[in-house]
Image (cartoon, rainbow, N blue to C red; front, side, top):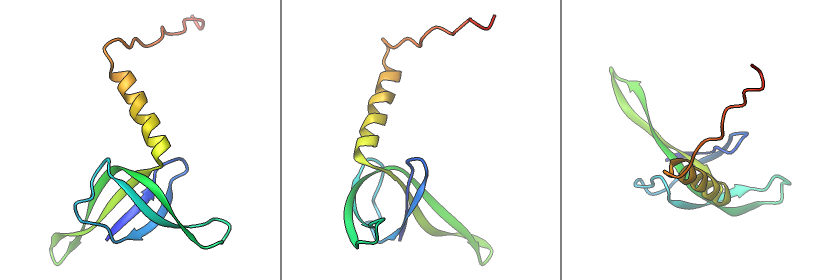
Length: 102
């Protein structure tokens, strides 16, 4: 079982879903999501941004509890990838600090 959470502000729990156990970062998922207007369920596309394994202390030892997937909508994920690529680029120079306060 995977607990899925949308990370776009504000964070939103998307429920628990049965997904392949090897689901990892960067994978596209099509999840059934309840419509906000109460008009049923529709499938939406998401991209996994982070995978977390959760453990619970049971019987004197830690045992695997569940896997949590943080997801984002594809447009947001693509924009974040582009921004991160730009910031890591050797040609990127941060803007000069604003010295108006001194």
